[in-house]
Length: 196
Image (spheres, rainbow, N blue to C red):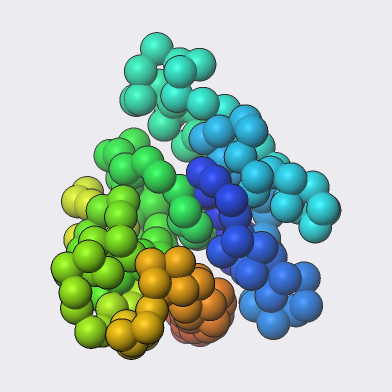
């Protein structure tokens, strides 16, 4: 399968996945990373890892629909089979969803359905829960509402600060996402060989 990673910022999840692809630990091919910010650090990480990178911003288009249509065109030109969101901070619209139904993965820093949205780690920490975690799910037309593929809990200890919890969550993401992506890619290969 041909994979594209979409990211908006730092790109630590992208980097964890890219290392796995480059080491031959993930089946399929990482074709490119895309960012919706020209100055996102993920693009620098991609350059260092010799991964093809593209970027354009919503403000360069008449509206979000035109932006998403251009992104869809890029994905189709590159013959992408699976989209992996890694800190991509935009809600996926119908243009992409209709063409990539059940082929867009996302990782979220909480045990969904608890603490969806932009600040899952902070929200869980401030609420005072004792257990939070990481969720990998398929993307649907809601915000962090798609079918859950995998979850891993992370304990919040009394001595944890928000910063130490963020670090634990990121370590868990970097361990869980490659494992889940590998399973998804292997299952896809099995389905193809069966002619499904």
